[in-house]
Image (cartoon, rainbow, N blue to C red):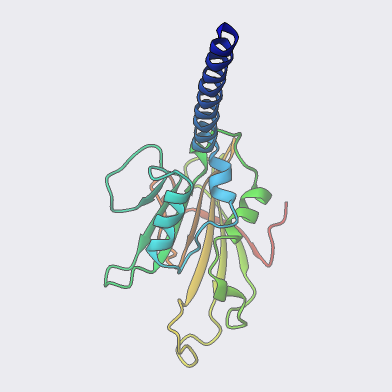
Length: 213
């Protein structure tokens, strides 16, 4: 009888241990997902420019990252990694995405990796033959020699005469850099959609069909 009691209690203890271990694993997994900002930005299922807001909301929920994916007009928080804006007249099409690279826990990204990530956020129609080959421009910040502004411009070939789907006239990728690497990435249809680190009057350094190092 004593042996049966011991066996019973051993089984209970084993169940308790397995349950606790499972809880700890879940907590660890959640913690890892929470701090791994680069995975949030590079996951193949992330939404893109010109998709509807619900894709951004669903992605945030699926990744357990509701505070890290934020609508621009919502209350500010210092955790957001993906900030987006959509049209105000009801269709909720996202026209601008801001990736805040300085907030990821991993090391800062270089230009090549950042451009690779940025291109995954371009709308699917960018390769439909309606847009010209991109132009790559580099601007020097007028006040800080360590800061540069990289602009990639996709221009619709015949915006006014052949645009039945009302696609944007331009699509831009903007990369902001300082002495540590890329700090911010924008994917947008608005050239002026920037943040205050860069002011007007920056000097154009070059304009080519690719970035020349």
